[in-house]
Length: 633
Figure 1 (spheres, rainbow, N blue to C red):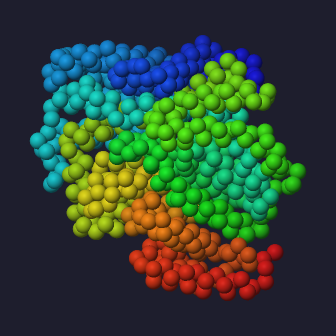
Figure 2: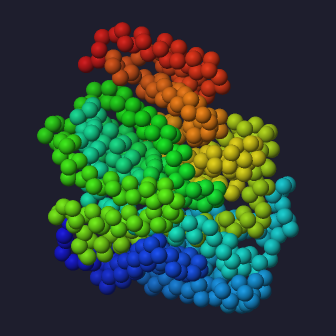
Figure 3: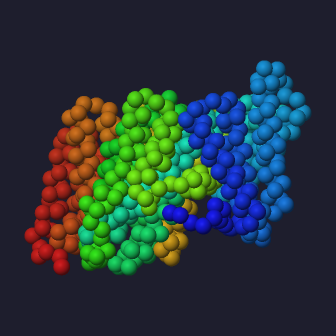
């Protein structure tokens, strides 16, 4: 773990900072991480400072690392970048300093400085998002701002009286309802501390341990590297909570291994992409969107995590089965014995890496807030790193972990201010309920078609945003439509959250599949469609939450067990139908695939025990004839 020097070149998507600017970035990132590590443990700061510092540091780091255009300097920020960073410090610093006075003396009567700094801050947030995520999310935000001004000209139920520029700027900037609203508060208070925890856990050697554990558990199986990808993405995903971070971190190891034993490049990239997407909803530490979900629904984070246990386990079971069948189709084997570490040796060296996760769960079960649930596991990761000499975190390693946590935040945090602008536009105009009414009316009050429309909207919005961004936008414009039709609030939000995860792998814009394709050197579109096949359950899960609430622990123990077992069999049938293969004898005939698809439909969309029983009969009818063939070589 020991490396020379405290400050190294800082790599971004298009720029690698060197020299004095690398030092500035590194020091700012370390200060950012240290500040929020402190606030998560002690919390002795004002609300405006907590929210303001998060956006300020995030924007400054983005302007230093991400160039404004293709021809910008590659080793240092330009004068334009520095100008944007100064604008971020001045406008957000002004809000932090003036918020209390504004709240007491100037509500609904902002002065010229309030308005001027508000315009600057809005521009800063939009530019921050544009540099990292592209122009689509900026266009969406501008449309939400425009509808506030042009309200009288909007069609039908979306119409409203309209607002003046002063009112729009004041609400967006000066209050705690838009830029500095609930999204920013959740990221500053809960999400970022967990990113720091993930960085500390990685620095302590946990990432390497989980990779070795996945290799020891699944390396000898057929298609072993692909199963390693699934296992390590599930384990690592419970730390990072970012699908793209999972792809880059685990995929750099697993994708070349998959290709080496015979997986096609598009399949190798797709398997890693969908496995990493699953990390967004893998307890105990799920994606950033779940923290927002818990906040919006006023539900304890632990409760959300527990509700996702069965869906997440079923998802990864289906994915492992799909990978196994792919290996059968292609005649692939596992790793050579000398490449597989012994499970006992792996656990003996790294069993302690599970303890920080136990600390997280323990604190949440005891009723502590998620920020406290991030602080003490971070401390425990540091302490436990001293169990072995080669993993001990020295001051230099702690410094780098703080920098890594802040660096990892730039991609997710870049969208937060702009998402706040979008939320402000929805809240100020009352667009959320209006849009939901239009959605329900368009679906003619049919719950099934409403879920279909919500999923399609997710894919479209997901083209220009992260999973978290896509979920946040739709949580205020689509989830109310489902609630209006009688879906429980938490289930409705989980529907839109899982649909947002689906957008990660859905062409034409599928960020996780793109990342996997880049490592695999495969065609992004083919990788995206392959990921969609391996992750077919993501298109089913939103409907499951609506029609089979037992999967979310609503109901008796018997109902929950029956639902989980029915879905397990349904996923097995679906996997064999999609792959045209069964695990023992290999290829199956077209008619068997049709029968198995019917079995999957009955088992995954049950309306009664008779439908479940029909699905089970169809599963046996489609599978048993295949078992009578000679065993596949």
